[in-house]
Image (cartoon, rainbow, N blue to C red; front, side, top):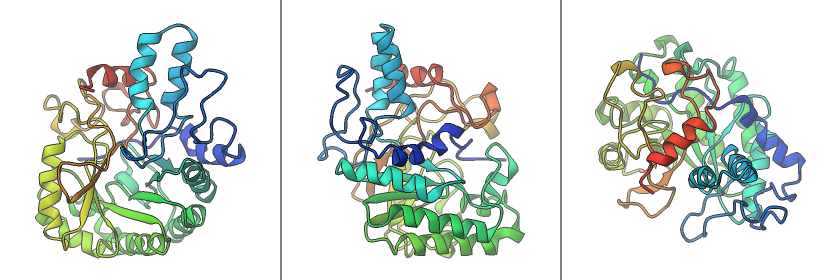
Length: 342
């Protein structure tokens, strides 16, 4: 089986939106631009709005690791992890409290005058029962979950990457054909619901430059609601170069009415891994590096943004010794940062 994404984020991330909400988002961990007065030398603040409009979570795992290293005098390691902590990354909404989490993240972003980046990954029969088993129990549960996300976002500025792999797995046969009609209906419904929100952009996941050809996916994308969406996302949690991703995105755009796209550049600094089992090159490959930092200033007018959709430093699953649904902080994150060209 070929999977383009990998394991979901660790359990602690699912509750972070709720934690932000319960904390009132104003205690130094809520996403505003005020420095951490207790430790100003290691505080994580927002990128200049002109350079990147997306919100940087000042209480991410990377931000906490920077503080932990600084506390014990590991300044070099702290500087490496800061490369990750200072960048906006996707917040993956968990299955249990979608409204609370979405509200927490978007309110924190709003307080900073920034846009929240949310990733929705909860479609039933997700990942064909492989490394990221899970997803909503059925169609009704998924619709209720999407409704919760929408209530949490309201009119706050938000960009959503919708359901990594959901369309791709219908095309490559990983998802059984008997689930296809329902999945298309659920994706269309999600796009429609999210687009009722005044300030939300929706990018439907559309695979990557290495899995196949745009001719194979453009019709399924239409069935999934790409016409109503703002565009599509490519290279989510994968490693294909930005150049190749732009080429793929432009070819696909021409087949779906000129829709724009976003590119996940979180770990593509050294391009794709070419060794080992071809079926698992996507999963925890060695020697990878951080890619271009998130920005809306891209190399092509059809590419709306480079985003860090996948959080650098997290495991892709149990292959190559990775933990299931966990992270490798700080070892894996340090390797990515040290290998980066920034």
